[in-house]
Length: 28
Image (cartoon, rainbow, N blue to C red; front, side):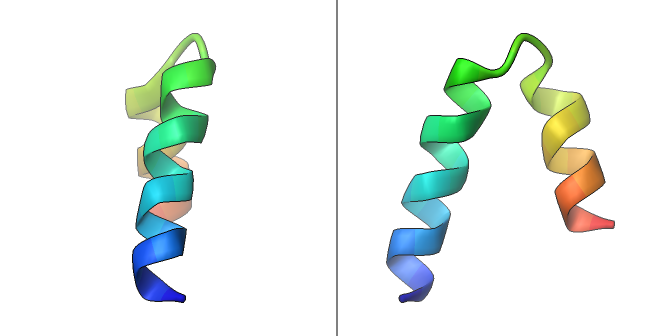
C-alpha cells in the first residue's frame, strides 16, 4: 500500500501544474 501511495503521488504531481506546491500541501 505504501509503494502504491508513493507511485500515486508521483503520477498526481506529474499531472498538477505546480507539483512542488502539491507535495508541500500533502506533506503538511
